[in-house]
Image (tube, rainbow, N blue to C red; front, side, top):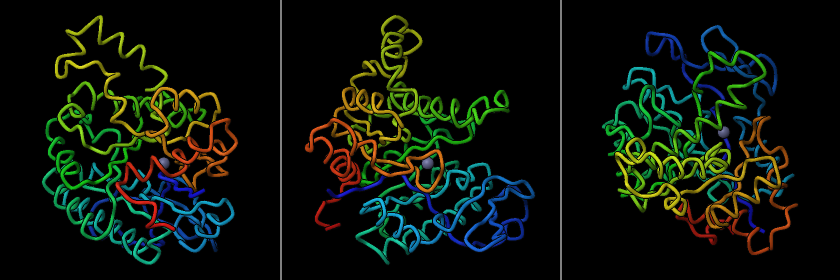
Length: 335
Ligand SMILES: [Zn+2]
């Protein structure tokens, strides 16, 4: 059965010294301190150790073979969004990363699909780069769950979403820069508590802000099974019903009515949670996503779905049907 993983991250093996290039710090660099391993550094501070599967397409393809993954959707690592930087510098780095991903997709068109990154803090530049992304063969973009001080309902961002709808660009929303991380110094809580909250923040902002109402054809997916959103939809709907004065100020439609417009990846690490997601959203809106090659991802890509009690028909949707629908691509392209 064709297997498409909509949530994987990739970096170039090297990139220019950004502190030198842009004249200020705060950017990520790679320290290739031994063969096949590199340290991601933010200035002098260690961020994460990565292996060669993070940058080497050949290693990735070997891993794919091992786990029978046919296609990976490639996106950058969220720490490379750089929305905080000067817009022209974010644009410059985005173009570098996007060209890198487009090159890999071009070399292996049946094995990889690409998503670009944009200088979201500058909507005019973001739209221009989005248009370029679609011209160089990417299928859409990955964006953060918020953009600096803006949530995704911020009116400045709307033209970007509108352009994505018009261009048929798939949008993947990834949690990052987790809320309240200063309150979570221990136990990896920004990743375990902050990230699911970020995804819910992003989905609720787009629903309550009327973005999904105004853009019914926007192809939008959220990482990590939508974080805490699906399990709190009852509370969100109830809040909308009892306090419309607070919740329904920009959109008067029940939040639950927007579920058919939303795609979620399958990365929930729990059989019952996946079953709930499929029951809530329908199998056409859930797509395999693993967060490859990072350890908080599904380490045997697709296993949760493959070992589930779902019928083959539903498994087919989860393993590739929903992904293709979201991306606007046909199965034949990958056979
Ligand atoms: Zn991820």
